Length: 75
Length: 177
View 1 (cartoon, rainbow over the protein chains, first blue to last red):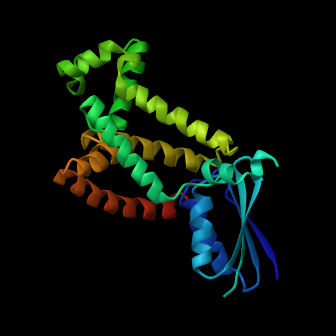
View 2: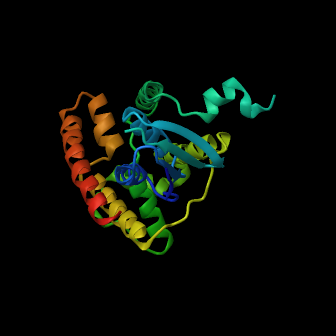
View 3: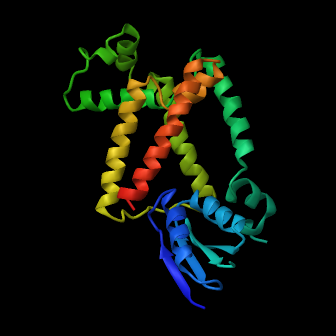
């Protein structure tokens, strides 16, 4: 089980979502992807997509206007 | 208990409001705009005036430009920023958006990541600005206010907005990521 950080700071929608989708495809079940974002609309669409796909998702506020979306690949 | 943990603070200021709430509020406010000013809500047309004022401030002259040739347009330009309702409204949008992120303590100055991002932003901005003027409106003036006024043009604008968005997204993924 490995943990991968995906730096999406400074990137606007839909770039963080597309990057997260591509990255997660390369990963194994049980791996954890941490998407780092500072664009508030990515805080909505990245967790929404991951939950719909059936993965475990948690959002953490790191700093003012910075979040980490933690996705555990479930399938 | 700190204000950060207050239930109403979280609900009203911190978290995003549902899309439906936003849609209803926008609709109500654009009705207020139409009733009080006699004109439907628009955003990008105002930016053309801002551009003209900046151009005049550095010594340019737009008197002969077709776009600004009507009497109304000339009067607006002569009246200046503070006498232009649309400008005040756009300033209000900017100040309001800033206030909203500050209240949610979400303010951050974002880094520019790469030259590609700059190029994409400049090309995108120019295309949007040009398109909005040549199409007599942006997604607010032409789409939103168009549809709200029962105008077929709003729906046509919307259809091609979708087609453009599909092409734009494909290009974004292919060339700018």
